[in-house]
Length: 193
Image (cartoon, rainbow, N blue to C red; front, side):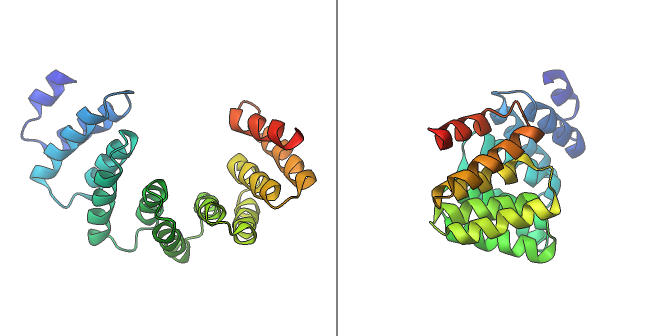
């Protein structure tokens, strides 16, 4: 990758591809962000490069940097549901549940996506709004009954609300879809304990 980077010093697409490659290597998020910054030096409004750099920063736990990148990308493409969802994830990680909920809701107005319902449900649950969380998980399951995350998260919400039997049923459904997903097993064990 080092040789590729040197060969592409004046090619923003080369820098972007280099950043994308670094992003696939655990522990090289800094290299990915640096390569993507180089791509952005040539094309400051390249939303794909901004999004990739935001992902690199997020994976490197630079949440403020990731948020700044998603803000920048959304100034160029304010109606991009995936960008709104991603910024919501960052805001959620920063503990800004109100901001996360606003981003998830705006994303869902533009395009319904089961993963976004799961994310919004988690933000509702984090704020103690179990019924709203359940409604979002239910909608995610309606849209994609094979989404193990939706079943698992609904199980967690049901357990939080005191519905242990419903939680166990949801965890079992999630395990039918993703039997190697450790979090489901952990949550099932906690519910049965």
